[in-house]
Image (cartoon, rainbow, N blue to C red):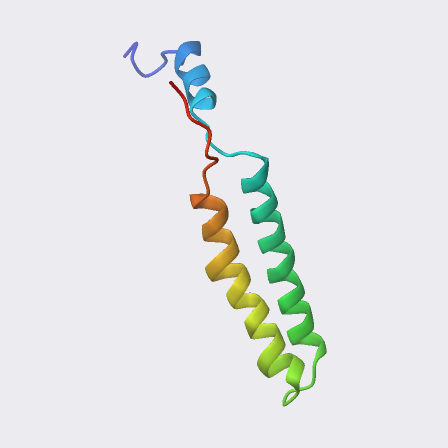
Length: 83
């Protein structure tokens, strides 16, 4: 019963943030991906049904946001060497 109400160790919480490998560049890629996705949906909604905006430009922006930038933000790692 005491294991149910056990307080988390502060060491484990500190270790979580020490191993956090996202850098400023990761957040920049992620923000750029989100902006591109939002703009893609806005452009798709504003264009007419059979227009260049709705059929070509917006899907390309969404593809780049979803398939390129968001995974790049998750996978990118700085080239710093730790010894």
